[in-house]
Length: 112
Image 1 (cartoon, rainbow, N blue to C red):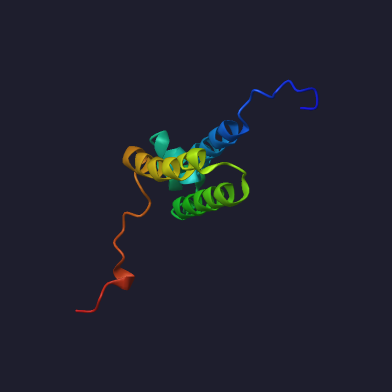
Image 2: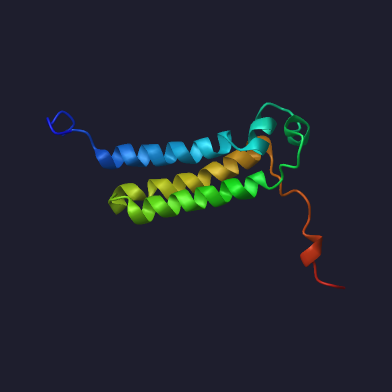
């Protein structure tokens, strides 16, 4: 950096690319999504209940997007890519491998 070799490199684009890559990797390291991606039952593969993995992955993704948008010095004409990609990755993952949120919320259903 001190010698000036990387002066032509756009650090904003590099940071944005790394942020989008991290968003994709979050689903790759999720216990539930990884097992479903290979066509296996997650509870059999990991031998414990993994239904909370999707909620934790979403929470990590929201934290990552918030941190990038608040603390990375990226201008707004490039920064919009990070939250838009986060919003597109989740539906793609749900449509490809399914969701853990398949049970109806009977606990919060109104009493009839």
